Length: 252
Ligand SMILES: Nc1ncnc2c1ncn2[C@@H]1O[C@H](COP(=O)(O)OP(=O)(O)OP(=O)(O)O)[C@@H](O)[C@H]1O
Ligand SMILES: [Mg+2]
Image 1 (spheres, rainbow, N blue to C red):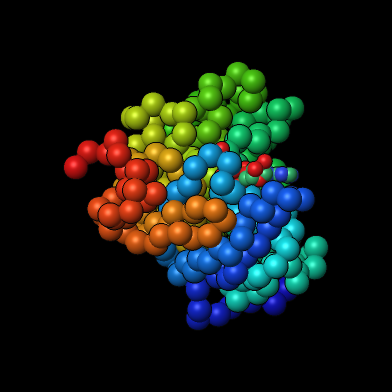
Image 2 (cartoon, protein in one colour):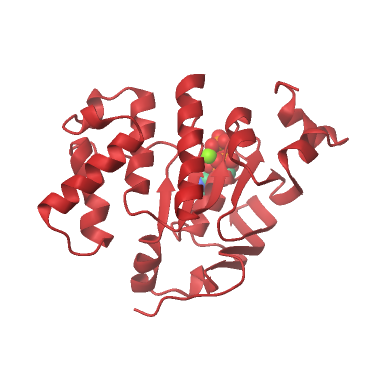
């Protein structure tokens, strides 16, 4: 299939609008992310961050505006094109969303079988083992999701998104609910992915340690718009309480 290429931003969101009935969630959201960049999206609970991510991957239709991935409009893609694009995107769900009837190893094999190129059993096994080692969970390969702790589920969810070495990563609260040490390890892994594969990422996070470590730029979502854009330090020192209050408890 023809792969769309473009020298512009890898992800380009313009004037995005999305409502559920009278609940106007995204009202005029704009964000461009260049190749190899990590952009963190901050926003209060329920403001529409997960909705934004779901619109980007085509899981939710948007009402107006535009989302372009590699220069191609998501809403104009056929199901086949969407499937193809999804193989280039890793999506870490807020809830991990593992398949409960499959082992950890099978959970990672699933995207490889559905999206990846034809591989031998040994090649598949090697990729799964490498990816699990990356998230520090080699020993969990034969466990069922029900046997995992919350933090382990998060890391397996991350491993499953990384298994295809995607060009775009969308992280929905990748470190929320983890202890600070594990959270830091996950943030480091996100950085490694960016450095090693020049992954382009949108990271939804309330975790200021994760944001500080991973963000090249940040945007604050308020009332469905990108209310403020800047680096971690710029937004932290903003005079606007709507913005700086997100940073209240961070170390100087
Ligand atoms: N499928 C849906 N149908 C109807 N309303 C929805 C749907 N998904 C989300 N919403 C609504 O959209 C709004 C934004 O939800 P969203 O999950 O994006 O919040 P969020 O910013 O990710 O919050 P959190 O930080 O708690 O995860 C909420 O008011 C929610 O009720
Ligand atoms: Mg959410």
